[in-house]
Image (tube, rainbow over the protein chains, first blue to last red):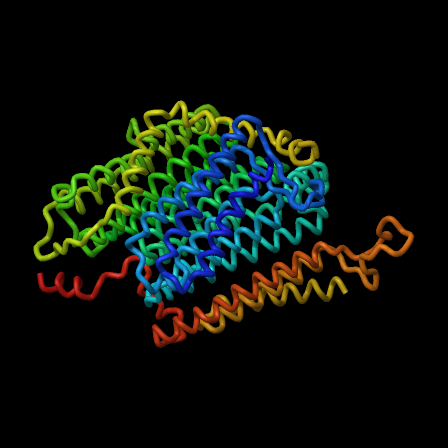
Length: 496
Length: 129
């Protein structure tokens, strides 16, 4: 039964291998991708249900006990994130059906999506810090390929920046791992948590390593001073790839921050939380201001990714069970809303041939369904009740007020207003204003694109209307993150 | 020996960072290579150096002798070398393709994806109106 923990990694791997072996047969690629993503979602949902019923699960890979062997660990945070990964992977695969041309198919487009999903799931389930690094790299390599597949000049330029900056982040991460191993002699995260807390003489040293990790994960999560690669690269990718990146890649960085700073580096909590607090506030404000200055739909959305990351790391800075659960709720809500906005931007591009707001217009009259789904996703992102974003922001603001961080609450509310402003900008420019003369070139959008768009809009509504029901697993994850002893016991206790 | 390696690691990081900040693509790629190799040496050094004591359990013994080398950092470095090599190979090919499509090795020429690049056509229209 505990093999269920390995399935989210093994199933996409199998699909990726099958896809690679059949590269000469473009017709087989999409069904294989669909099978892989669907199987991943099913396995992840089963894992989530199992973790919900019975608590934290550990799989000792190769049969070696915890501090020595490699472990896969699923707590509620991991299980929820893997499930969302499956959902986003399935949606992006379905969305890609008619979008991907033959050249991309022959280059292994669907297979690399599967590799990406494998890396992301592996990172969420990894129980030791070196495997976290390895899964990060698997995910990054797949993302490098997906970003440049298709071979246009902007893609190469963006790819170069993306590769260089991510490699610097990986070097930092690996240096941190090396130093941490030199100091403690272990790589298992639960074991590290025990040793870093016990070695009070080494606490200062651990803080240095913590800062290396903060920079490394912050770079991947695109927090305040380290985000410049994101708006320079994401918008060149085709819509389904950009949606996949926007939904998942930065969130893996946030996940790693959540995991490492709730479990391992709690020895100097006052310092790290203060730092995270200011980073989060600066991330929120600078991201949303960057978005307000743009005129290209995909660029506005790229800057919003950054701004929203700030809310999630703010949950980590506040560090109460409510705030940590709220950060996860925010993350899930954001993945759903943001992925869908990128999907919709892709549909707009195919209908009108542009992402530029000044070349768009009149979409609300011509395509009411598209307008409705955009409106739902955009208002959800801005935090308008009764959509998912309202409850996500509500939980975060409440957590801030409970810890008497009124400045944080104020920043969150203010940034919410600015988000609303830039979403309204897209709404009025692209959907409401009359179409500019001579700009109308109606493309065809097939059902494979509509299904994920409608499904994710429905999810955004469901997550808002049924917030109470959705909050329960997130609250449980928050409690588990706050109670690090539970995680340590589950991993090191040995007994399943 | 530790001191020598520590200085080497620092030197590799310094050279790598210096090359990363240069304007030539080829230098950036070489800088990345130096950084990854410096990191591998850092792991090796941080875990402690042992000379002439391989981690083998001899006949009749049940545990490792004290002071034997730790095999784990070497396994980690092996993994990191594989990953680093793959990414460097990818980065080299990518740099070559960038050079072919842009026609320049200068990083300042990579401007088509930067945030606000006003299209030339639109600028001309604005100048007219």
